[in-house]
Amino acid sequence: MTFTNGPGVSYVRAGEGPASWLVGDTYTVKATSESTGGAFGLIEASIPPGSGPPPHVHTREDESFYLLDGVLEIAVGEELTVARAGDFVYLPRGITHWFKNPSVTAARTLILVTPGGFEQFFLDAGTPARPGVQAPPTGPAEFERIAELTGRYGNRIQAPTGAPAS
Image 1 (tube, rainbow, N blue to C red):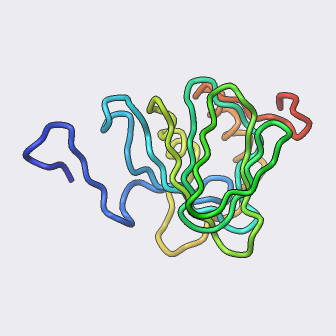
Image 2 (image 1 turned 60 degrees about the vertical axis):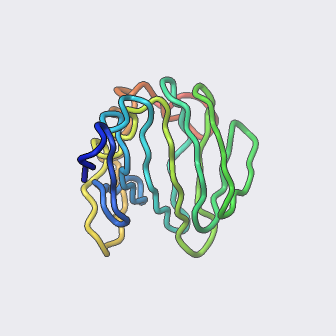
């Protein structure tokens, strides 16, 4: 929805926005680079127990997390912290990081990417999500496709040892 009394103003209702499944998580895009004049992208993520992306590095954008519900382990390099509902984490570009849900209930977080643009990765790399259905497991062929798309967006997936994955 766009307000008629202000150019560039946008409104996305709860439960709305394009959503995709990626590595077992559900990512719903709430604001795009296009809707914010390039300033940022905003994604709402639902991370099931045991899920989360592999170690990776952003080279074009900074990433921030505001945890709405649940618990996430967030690693920066070799350092690990546990974030809980209400916690905020800012990760500048250029550092290896990952997150994982260590609990038995889903975690929900807002992910802010600045500048905008990377939010489109979630839609391009993921599979369109269906409401009320859990994300299917990601197979080896999908991981290869995701790794290739990650590079197109200026990011790198890291191997568990910290060496770049091939």
